[in-house]
Length: 438
Image 1 (cartoon, helix red, strand yellow):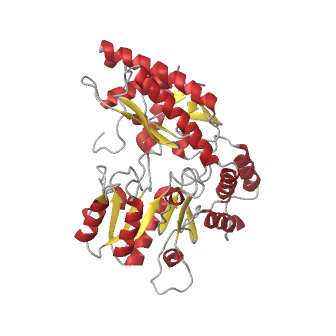
Image 2 (cartoon, rainbow, N blue to C red; image 1 turned 90 degrees about the vertical axis):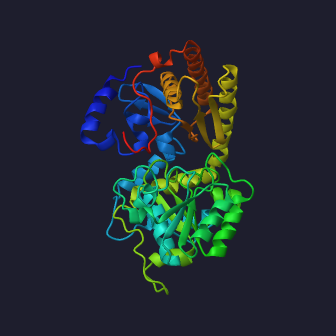
Image 3 (spheres, rainbow, N blue to C red; image 1 turned 180 degrees about the vertical axis):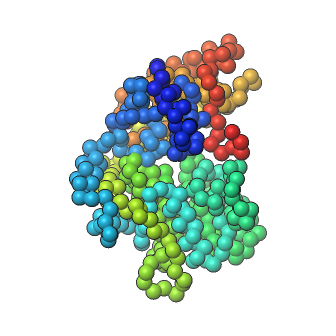
């Protein structure tokens, strides 16, 4: 494959954009050098880069595109609405229509508030929790990758430059599926923790009744429970992971997949907490909640309404799980075929799969991963480490991915056996997003 135009754009992008992209997960350090730097078109499960190379896309806009690129029902709704205007001086009727739709779908939602990204709504959930409880500390699950670009979370990572120590000290951590680690925090900081925030599940699901016990603990200690359903929402089930596991939070946040790639974030929750951000009388001081010029952009809400109706009518979450289940079995069988199952393993929930990569005696995991991605992308599969099945992916896409995966595994096996992987690897290795220095 030729990436000449991408390489030229890379130089220009790093000259005028910090990191070369507006989301770290899309950065050049997350992909091999031999990969598409810039995408210009998407259709269904395919994307094309600026050099004309075509790929099956398994990232789907960082999991934001659940139905498929350029999905007709969504595009038609957007085109119809955008001709009427994008933003008005008073609210659009679409705000009420979408809000009522969400309240009827999401179990914990008495009220909802809109924004343009996930970080905004998770931070709003934290602010509400602090106001509701009168406490300052936030307990986050240490095993989950990301909650917000705001200081309350970023200060807890290794990329904490610019975050005051006083802010860092307000965030404490517990471990997923370890209820004792939560209880120990509550005892260590009595009447200080405002909320617990976590994803209800990732590739790892709750076990030993963890979420139920967490709900009970939060109730006993007067702590607000927040589920980050950015990924699980409308993917595990149309009603979210809270419905699947039958554990209902006080607040929940949504974003990816809610509008098939259009920018919509949602904060949902109980009325007595949410109404702190209202304009009608309560016994609490008012919370300046979410107030953004573009938070209820008309055509994005039209996209969200069309997306949710399609997800409901077509039972899309069930289809996503079917595609994922096919992938998992086929790919792990290939690992065994080439005696690579100690290095590569596809795991997770069928609608949210990831690839784990281990080191060898000679090569670290980043070398192994980068070379494997290089060979896979070279066969027309755009993949960075996780699968995000969409409604546009078919069994035919699975078959083509399996064929490319087999080729990449064969090449990896040859390189490991001949101990020349470093000679075949083009460019630098991929790196973790969260690192202290470049």
